[in-house]
Image: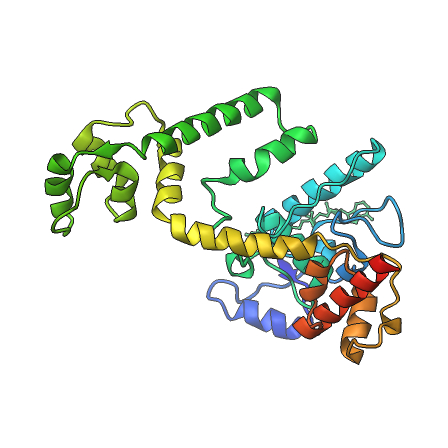
Length: 313
Ligand SMILES: Cc1cc2nc3c(=O)[nH]c(=O)nc-3n(C[C@H](O)[C@H](O)[C@H](O)COP(=O)(O)OP(=O)(O)OC[C@H]3O[C@@H](n4cnc5c(N)ncnc54)[C@H](O)[C@@H]3O)c2cc1C
């Protein structure tokens, strides 16, 4: 029988196995596996997954402190892709936190590091409303196509879906006369409506799109996935707008690059802890700097002022 190679003493493990009915005489002849999660400190790694100090070496997966098949595969994809882009002299691909869970995973690793096996829980993403399964191709296909990961056939499929989606959103603005809209909406608890109502307004009032379709015999030419994305876009328009505003705000900080060789010890307004952490991580931009544990908004303001003085010099 294979056992688990843990810190548990051999006789304790053996006693555990032999306590199971039918395994009274079992013995452990060889330990099956041991797992090391902390071979590499990911604070030493760039968001491309290339080592900061060893050019051309990329790491991905368990060696970076993560656990899980998807976590390993996601990093493998980005590390491999960036190694290939570098060899071809092309700019790297770094996915932002609002573009992909891969972006959240890698940003967490290279900004915060990890002391225990890291798993990509959805709760780690602050832009969850935008990181949906139904809009994955809208977020990522063009990027994949630009760097050669997406085939022409797949890309054309995406363009077709995008075009249908935009067409459907426009059609949802068409209005239904009050005479037909009112009795329909009454079924969903709405008393009266003043004037005509668009299909989009009905969906915003939480009327299921499928009911709108069957009542007014519309949109039958659209596929299920296009209908789903359009319904989510219309129904949650307010939340999505709020989410996009937050993303735009965050992007402004991401766009403010910090010099890679900046010595944070020399910036007097920073707190001691912030100086140490910033020197350790060497963030690429203000957005990343603000996500380092131990760097607070006041420190980010100090860095902003510092960058402004650098520019004016
Ligand atoms: C028992 C068990 C169950 C699990 N169940 C799940 C699960 O249900 N779901 C899930 O998401 N994750 C699960 N995991 C975790 C998941 O398997 C790992 O996190 C993931 O496989 C790590 O992938 P990796 O590519 O980083 O490493 P690995 O898959 O370990 O690949 C590393 C490879 O490098 C090779 N290698 C090592 N040293 C050298 C060397 N010197 N030269 C050449 N090659 C070398 C190894 O032989 C190995 O093939 C489980 C893990 C274990 C152990």
